[in-house]
Length: 207
Image (cartoon, rainbow, N blue to C red; front, side):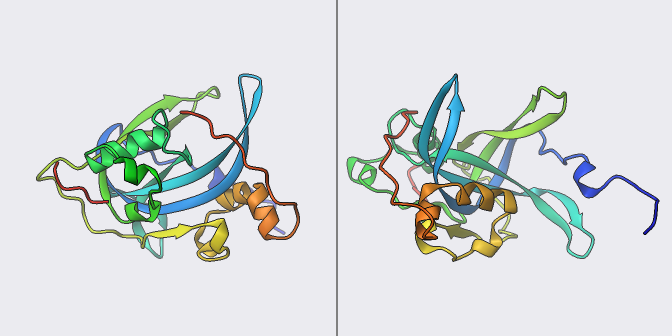
């Protein structure tokens, strides 16, 4: 074994999406099941989803064999269309109109797959001094602004249909899903989960 050591891939600096608005396209909608979070000393359980986007105009080389690929970013949401939820706020801005009462009875998130949007990115310094980028807002594309064709094929993943598209999920996402009671129930390692109260949080409509 060689005694020559070097920094590994995990030490490489993260390529940030520049601050400001960028065209983006939804590439994934992922069911995370019920997740437990600690917030201000309280433990909360909420059903969560993860929505991912690619930025086709902002690229980097992650693998020499594939060459330049678009950067991608994701957001966690409570799986709720409550009037105060961030998911509802972002979806309404993305659609360019509010939900009807009928739509609020049940909206299929698969409808957003492949749909372009304008994603506003902000940079934030973490406690350790490093800077990270985060999607701060989602809205509809202004008229006349085009989003390049998708690079990555859009997909959805739900615990109910496991293991469909399981091989496409990053390991850190799989780990979150495996901690959920829904996944454990589907895998036969836990009793059925108890329903948890959810935390309140253009003319053309593409979805």
